[in-house]
Image (tube, rainbow, N blue to C red):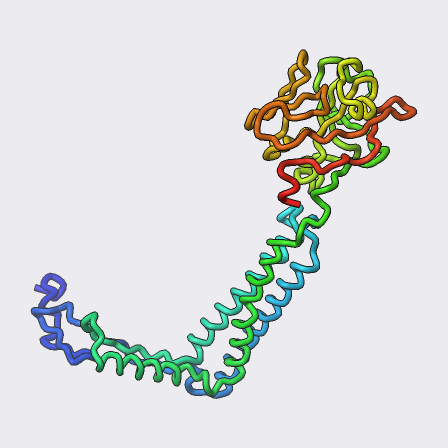
Length: 350
């Protein structure tokens, strides 16, 4: 009978291990112990250790430079700047630079720490027996002794170059989070008080993107318009349309009750902000007979024949009116910006 047919016969009678335990024929799964320690080249050659030290220091230094690049990118690149990067396509220059620099900063700290641990710190494996969860005075003393031994084995006291560059990298990385606080500002200044409308800008039909003539607007119709030059593929289109959106209605001139409204209109064509003064929803419901417009969100109702005053709902003030005229070519154009800020609860926000 071969040893393969009866594997137990092939086991040695006794087998010692690093912990002093013995593997016998009755206990083939005894702890085999730790393999013998093999020194690394850095343990034998100080020049190799110096090379590893320089590599770690280089990674920490690169992390510091990347953190400085992160802060510089945050200041240098405007949020609307778009660049083409193959194979990503058109991307935000700010987002790309922030992601790359912060990623490099964090990666280099991690890579430096790993390289430091693998090449310079002690790699001797130590087996520690399990002990009760409660920490006895002896255990606490052992933990402190192990901590001191680990600090000594990390050679952080002797490797001043590593220590200095590591502290520099760790000190600079948190600045990335501090710089991100800039997103809480800056203050809007006058951006909420003005729109893209200006004197001479033609009214562009939002559906056809063609300039509007007075004869294009018929009594009882509701037309939505945007200022000339605003394109849907513009980077800031969404933020601008939230203030620039305009609704145009034609009312019989003798039905207009407000004097200023009649003076700012063109043959009964009135232009009002489409943005509800309650919470900023776009107004889109128009009732021809009463000339009332209704916000679908919270049912604020405005009378377009009487200065767009609020007749129902939670809106706090009338819709701002845009002063319009007809140019020499017969197109409707603005006489300037809105006389007052558009949108909801502006005076609380501004």
